[in-house]
Length: 112
Image 1 (cartoon, helix red, strand yellow):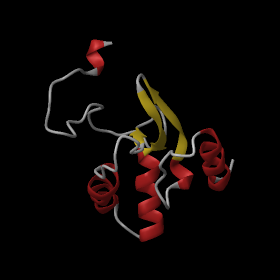
Image 2 (cartoon, rainbow, N blue to C red):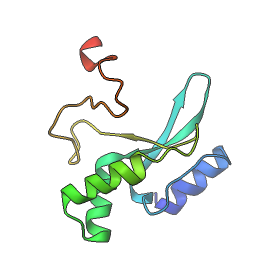
Image 3 (tube, rainbow, N blue to C red):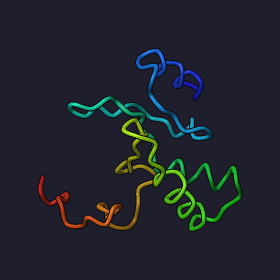
């Protein structure tokens, strides 16, 4: 499925879903959460790869840009989500649980 076909399919399912421009190849689906509207789901590693290829950034610079300008962008409750796929070529080598909002400690993979 092409990026445009993915966009059209999501728009048909929910006309208010928000999508990031330039990351269509990293769009992998939708996240459903109880009591909240669905949001678009992107492969985080693929987004960073897109920045490296498209913009000529090093991995470190692409990740820094992504964290601040994309992952860190809050555009309301419909802000897209990002995942790190286990076993994919984009799988992180560091810890699986990152403190992204300074809250720390709440829950971990050990809880499952």
